[in-house]
Length: 108
Image 1 (tube, rainbow, N blue to C red):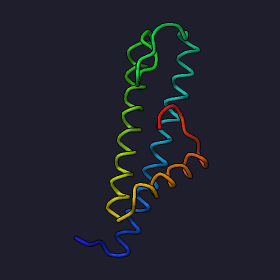
Image 2 (image 1 turned 180 degrees about the vertical axis):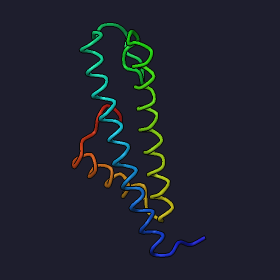
Image 3 (image 1 turned 60 degrees about the vertical axis):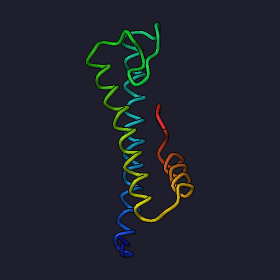
Image 4 (image 1 turned 30 degrees about the vertical axis):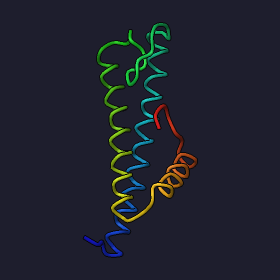
């Protein structure tokens, strides 16, 4: 199924919005991890997504959810970009532009 020009433009806009959201979640993850290290200490093993093993369960659950949201939004962005008929290499350029403009965070 071929998309109209308007549908392609919508998918491109959606891809950009999803990228912005992904990196907003990534920055939120970073802020929470820094706060939690200040509150609970930076010792111990690091664990993907939850950052530190000794953090309280509610903090780890929030960190895990934020990390998951980053992955989901990046996938949605790539999908929308492909639906618009765009190439992966141009999505990578868009991604770098978003990072330069808004910041990266822990993930991405």
